[in-house]
Length: 226
Image (cartoon, rainbow, N blue to C red):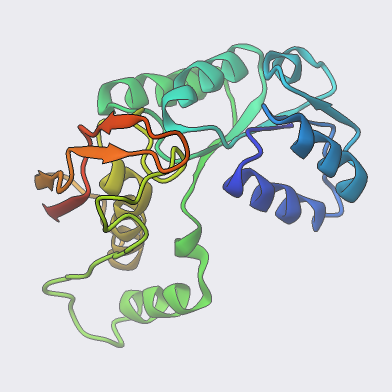
């Protein structure tokens, strides 16, 4: 079952359809137009606008949580309590403390669990990782890099998809975590300490579709030392 059929949920759906041993029983989406599309195009057995129907369905063994960040906790916890394995979009939670609790809850329940960081499986990343581990590239001394997007670089750039005020750390959670995960995979070392500077360039934006004034509290740019 897939909960959340926005941009990334659709990618999960298409990826799962390529696996011969997987059947997509049901998807949950807030858009009935999308629901009709999925039924017709992908032969999904059931579409609902209420995600708990997937949690309560005894035939569903695995939940893919592709919802916005602030909804992750409730859905992940419900899936674990229902005994369903779970593959969650990042971040696992909005705080490290809550993320740790949910991780331990899944372990204690014997639930198979994972978070989606797709760049680590890129062929080039895997090749470099193997060369580093074999010692072919010498000893890594320092790693630097950046993940840049210009999609919301202007004061007039605003969509609820790109700038949701439902997360305390927008740039670092949406794209920065991919850089951190890739670096950790290459070096074979987890991040242990963090120092970050978070900047909000435009604290006030306007939704171009509705004219609504939006006060932004999360980050447009974040620089991090780990």
